[in-house]
Image 1 (cartoon, rainbow, N blue to C red):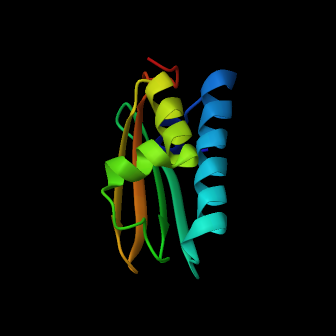
Image 2 (image 1 turned 45 degrees about the horizontal axis):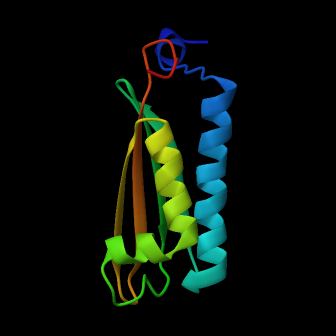
Length: 116
């Protein structure tokens, strides 16, 4: 294994791994149930001391209400936000009618992979 790969290796607690898994699961479930998307893009990577998650679709987008309103009324999105909050992360949801939805999440991790 190269030094570059070794330096980018991340290990996380079981709690963080399970929570990240559940975030992806909820995001993909929402897409399947509501978006009518033809394409989905997911990413999981690290940058510095952050775990970056991105979930995007090309579906119908969120209802005409604001994204915050959709989170408050959308059980799945509110659960995602709660899980991100538990990990002291940030979530950004952008959506445009008939242009899909983009969810970006940052979760802090310590060097060596531990959750801060």
